[in-house]
Picture 1 (cartoon, rainbow, N blue to C red):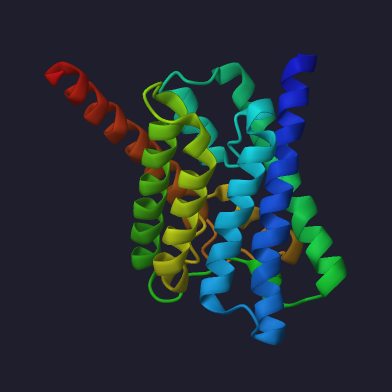
Picture 2: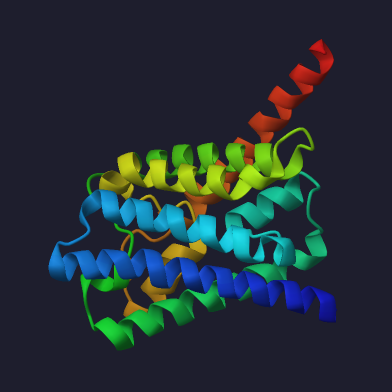
Length: 221
């Protein structure tokens, strides 16, 4: 149990970094306009890349309840460890949002994700973005044929790419913890169910598709 708690604490730290850097970039850009949409998207990608490189060997670098559940669903992670991982991720996200609220004030709703247009559109975009992200994660994290050193770069780049085109529509959360942290701190729940259900569905879809592609490739080899 102690070993699991150590790994989970690393998950909380990574999620804290994701929220403080990513949501912090949204808030700073709202105040100054210095970063722009490109800068915000790159910040999300860079913090994921840095955190994977720094503590991926300690916890597996999920930083995302949807990723944790998809790993467990595909038998790459123990179901018994899922609750403590998710709890740690949520705590890290809430602490990150609280830090931003204290340091920067009530700016841009502390980086909350809110649909820009219709709920249906935002839901569909979140499913698609998370599926793409999970497909890449499965490819670089579970397949021994992948180049391990490139995992952080590939996953970080995918987050940035998804945020670049999906951010203006849905917020490009892809992560229930990243969305729930700011929502809890602000006490605002506008369509937040999207950012729980859609990433869960998308992560499972991405993981399953990768497994199917991998099985097909193995069969043809």
